[in-house]
Each structure stands twice: as C-alpha cells, then as structure tokens.
Image (tube, rainbow, N blue to C red; front, side, top):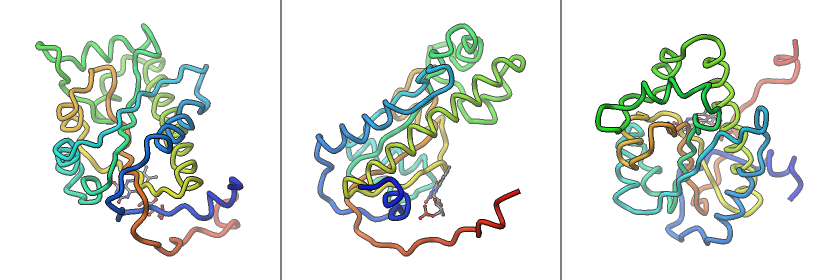
Length: 198
Ligand SMILES: Cc1cc2nc3c(=O)[nH]c(=O)nc-3n(C[C@H](O)[C@H](O)[C@H](O)COP(=O)(O)O)c2cc1C
C-alpha cells in the first residue's frame, strides 16, 4: 500500500474482531518499529506484546477502564529504553528503583522531575520522540496489513509497569491495542493547511 494511502485510511480503532493477530503480521508490525529512526541511532525502545486475557484486563484497569484495551486480541506495550542512553540516564534509572528493585514511579512528569540537568532532560525527550516514531511506523504498517490500532496514552504507567513486571529502565510510553477492525469510523476533522502553516 502507498504510504499516503495508509496515512489517509488510518483511524483510531476502538472495536476489534475476536480473531487473533497472525504471528506473521505481528512480526511485520514490530519490524516496522525496529527500523524506525532515532536520535544518534540509540533505538531507545522496547516492545512487549500482551495477549494474555488477565494481563490485558490489568492494562484496561491501568488505562482508565478503556474497554477496547482488554478486548483487542493483542496490545503492544511500547516502552522507553533508558539504558540505551548509557550513563547519561543511569541516575534516573537508579532513582526509579525501589529498595526491592521494583519500579517506584515512571510517569512522564515524575521522570522529568528526576532528571538531573539539561543532558538528562534532552535524553528523556529524545526517548519519547524515538519511541513515538517507532509506534507510528507500526500504526501505519498495521493499516497496510488490514489491521487497526489506537494510540493509548491515558494510563497509569506505574500500574502497567507492575502488572507486566517491567524493569525500571523501561517505563511504558504507549499502549497500542491491535487487531482486525470491527468498525469503520469516519475520518476525524483536521485543521486546514493555512491554519497550521506559520
Ligand atoms: C499521543 C496520543 C495519545 C492518545 N491517547 C488516547 C487514549 O488514551 N485513548 C483513546 O481512545 N485514544 C487516544 N488517542 C487517539 C486520539 O484520540 C485520536 O488520534 C484523535 O482523536 C484523532 O482521531 P483519529 O486517530 O481517528 O484520526 C491518542 C492519540 C495520540 C496521538
């Protein structure tokens, strides 16, 4: 599929068929994430694919009870990889760890507050940018394969981290439910070109 066609056809899908996502298609989606560009090529992302019903239920609870998070046959949890920035973010990772090694806090605001100086702040911003590019690569590839997705940012990161036993260096950034669409929503409005050009 032509890239512009995928961009135009994409919708946020919040209802999915029960059919599981074939492994081959899921692999192609993840491959599109793997190939994304990143600052200094740090590839500061990690992906966890969740298909287990109980785990998806926990994600739904963490995501303000958005039911489609549980109903989707799979959820790709896109995480930052703060270790990819090596010693520059090591301080943040240490502060994230509780005494027992589990995660203490990993909200965006919390993460930013933990940054010690502009270098760490820059790394964190890059980490979010990098994972976002990877996610949108996956979103558009999903469209080209007949799959639907929806970016989900309204969730409590600490709950997700605990539910999935994520390591402290990998705070969750985006939940991406994925499956065959069970709806065909109309395009949502966009600003006109003259409104966005400055
Ligand atoms: C960063 C980001 C976070 C979002 N978080 C949510 C979310 O938590 N729940 C949800 O239902 N949609 C979420 N969305 C989807 C937007 O609501 C949607 O993209 C927007 O309304 C435009 O609709 P469209 O994607 O169908 O074009 C999010 C989108 C982005 C890019």
